[in-house]
Image (cartoon, rainbow, N blue to C red; front, side, top):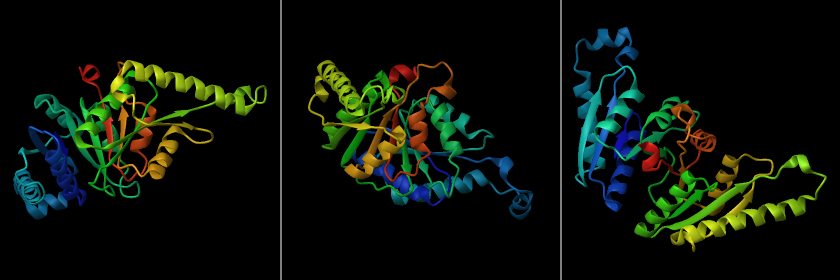
Length: 285
């Protein structure tokens, strides 16, 4: 697992959350990483501090945080780099150390644009767990929205495995839309009934194909005048879920187009629960 630190207030919570993950799941090694963009340092900074070994100072600071918030729960290493392009060096570390999961902190939108995070989601060849600064460590209820694609089914099966290991409550949701151009040619009531019948049949087929999810409760939600991401947010609040899991698609050969609109919108929304964005091993390869 790789934990991305930015030397802000969220780092301590991020390291502590990494500890809680390692205490509940088998994690072989954790890499705590930070990249220094030297070109962003002002001339005043250079004049004041001279030839100070900034990398060593930052590494020492991170080691202090890790010693206090992480302890010796599992093997770890602190890596500080000095590269002009943060997302490229982090992607390289994922490949070099065969990282399966990257833990990424996220500030609220009034404090940060989230631009680097969006780039990382598009370029990192691994699944990403986004931890908002307002999130809690305690996870008991998991929500998995699906659209019946291979990516979402993979995320669902992975979530079911996690729920079984940690005794979590798991819920599936599907957001459907009605083709409004046909109203008022057909009644809205009939359209809703037909749409839900179609989705119910899809769920039955899914349960037949994957017996392990046969007893997982699911909810059908009509998008109506809201986006899928907005409906997901409402469902999180309504069900008081503690973790949101979304599958990432990788069928498009262009990495910048493989993330999907709903995961992108969810990342850019100020939600208060961790967001687990899952790639399958096949997609990563």
